Length: 490
Image (tube, rainbow, N blue to C red; front, side, top):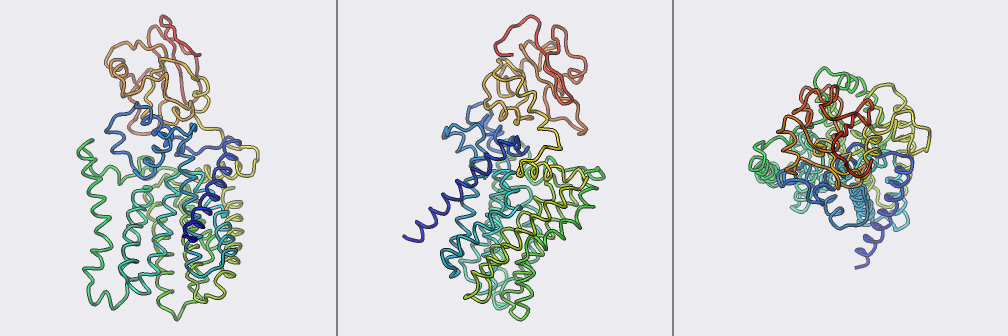
């Protein structure tokens, strides 16, 4: 009972600190694109403005579900994904504290280790991105802790912890799919030799059956509702092969690998300390190899994640390595020292690497400026200005499913004519739209546009339509107002 009360207390404190940090970022006008998109999606769902298909096939499902529960509970927030991220951060901090206490570390040292790891810039960057990356860190912590236990004794408890962690990784973020794929060969190397010799099939069945069942179930839902069973395995925002983003990402790979060593010293130090202890050396090397292999796969496939986010699971690995230090009587002291070194190393990496000119580092640089309260070198979100203009206007024809960030920035879907409304379908089927306001995005470099208005009226952004005049225009959006229909708002 006392341990559960400590878990809840620490979790509540960590949640409050995460909320304060996210509010600081919001004061400095920083909200990640993924946070805005997720908030817009769940606000649409909570207000009943999206179809069953879009909600049932939303990937990744865990952050969508958690954010939807926040939005549906009507907590008075226009950014439910931020509250969901703070909840995930509270759970991550409470998990670190609980595992520290189980490892025999004192209360004070456990609190300090937890605070230092959560103050690491890698964790702060993940928290600013949204609940999907934070849940990914929770899954990585569970996976690392279970892998250490699986190598040590091979019990069913640790095998099921690893199996559940794999499911959590896959259904938290696209990056989790690559982490799981990268982890498969290391699982075979980390299993106890006796268990592999006695029942190799049973071991891998126990480890992989839950994730196989979960993925097949989600694929069936995708086939049933959308006719695309495996669409969730691809990152819709990934850079295409040969694009500047992908080439810059490959160039940045060495910088990310070097940052790994300075931001997560626990891994190399534990490996050097355990050269003669297989039960510690093997999982340590396996965890490091898994993350590095996942970073290589993500970079080579053109992942939309920034380099610092690719490295963020190292915080979870650092926590697991600290809690499995071989000498129990100095475990707390070593954990504090290495956490301080990792915090300083990650801070130095954030300062030096985010000054690079590569486009792949732009989001990390913008985040760093917001954390420090420094003048912004990058423009604000491209949809913020048009969202401010639209305000509480009524009758705005907008493809909110393609641009959910506008819903989040407006703080509501009220006043919008969205794809789930019959009026939206009628407007696209007609030769001439009849809504009071039409918001049209600028042409993009993507080979296929997701905006249904642009699909139906490909020249609307440049030429408009008879009976409409431009009332707002910037590099990313144009808003047309009907000259014959009046509406409230702007």
